[in-house]
Length: 98
Length: 528
Image (cartoon, rainbow over all chains, first blue to last red; front, side, top):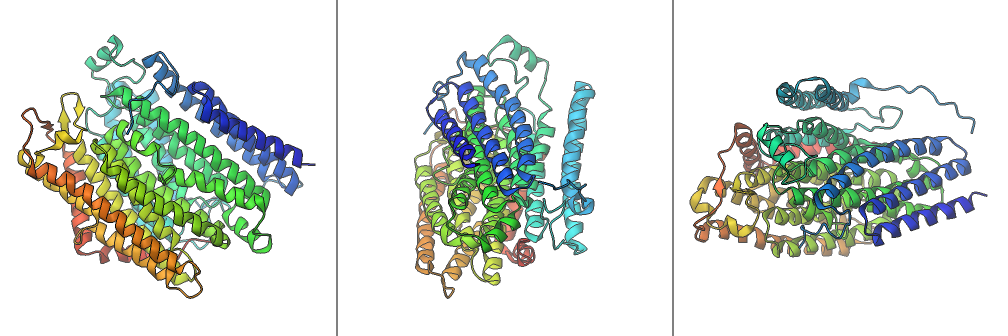
């Protein structure tokens, strides 16, 4: 009965990816990326159950650690931008183009 | 689910170059924590340079005593084979050279936390502060670059990808001048990079579901018995492919490259344009060749399209650029396309694989060093507000500073692939390998390979146009009255430019020197 979990994981991933594409606030975009990573984790533990080895569960731990490191770096960058521009909108950062 | 997790065996000797770089990075963090501010730089610089040189020496020792392992190290997580060692050597040389550039005064912000234009910033600048965290961050990034192409399972590859990228996101935001651009570049790189690595990870999950393992060899084995039309396999292949192609900046995933290259401090741009590209191409080759080798029916047409699009997009958009760093970024995109032509040729017999692998390794080595040289020249042409980025500011540079303009012109000719420069032999090797693979009996894509080479040659011709345009601008137009100043280069920058120039000329005259090494490295192929 792992299919449902896979569908849920696919949905979460799609919601995350859609959020990255349509949302304008850098923090929300970043949260959507984290949602995508969590969708990956769900897929990993589901497959671990399905194929019957521990690898997927171990990978989920690694992904959590990487995601935590990514939060540290990401928030540092977004907070710096916010302090400079008083806005965290990804549309306002538009100096680099063409 | 009754596996017991075994204590791993680690081949410390084989992995020594990696461990040296990561160890030095950790010591660097401790130096940041405990050394007084005025001492930090004088500790960091020798530590960083010595660790990179030491790791390089270890790579050489490993090759010289001929102890290239035949199987993967660290319980199958890291494959230190001929191509890995070659790529390690190249990355270590490139990063050593880049650290000499980074070492220069005035590239990095006094206090990243201070708002641009605020009194805090003025204070920090007056106090002569400069972020020395840059050195450990660079070492972590280099460590990630070393691990990325050597990773033998997708989890290690993902971790390496992040270890390489996270410090680079931060380094991009640390430019001393034009800080708004720098911060914007950092945010764009971060959001897009995190997005693409999520794709890579979901692809990994799908491949794990298909094969029951994430080791590259295991996936390949599962494919030889299982169905090749399983949606899990196809989705997994496509999504890991997206993650990897993003990192090398192939179209349609190239959008971040010009923005990030322009905004980042130039020494960091040099590190990204050389080291990251080398590492990412190595990883792409390993995944497609070792894990997805049986799927080449599916991935070769895709790579065909991506390679053609990348070359065309890179070459055509470069023409419209008015900023020197953006132009070099699009040129780097076009070169990623040329490299993909070589990736497509890794197919069929072992000799064919070895030939195209050799071509790619050679290309990476010579392109990397020329790129670092070109960006080193960019750091020297300065306006009062920072580097003179706009192309119009470069007009008449040949009359003000003939040596510098001449060196830069030579680098551009090497990018264009003019004979007697290293770039020519790089392109020749890759295109020859592609034509050869098309001529193999049984290759259904034979005609297509020839077509791709034609596209490549046309793209090279377009690219040559914009390189030559810059040369004409430098030598045949009048210098502006208030033209940019040529900074007096530091010893480090002189060394960087001299080394790049020597390699570009030397390899252009005697390509056998590097080709022979690349050949030795490639002939052992990747560990399956």
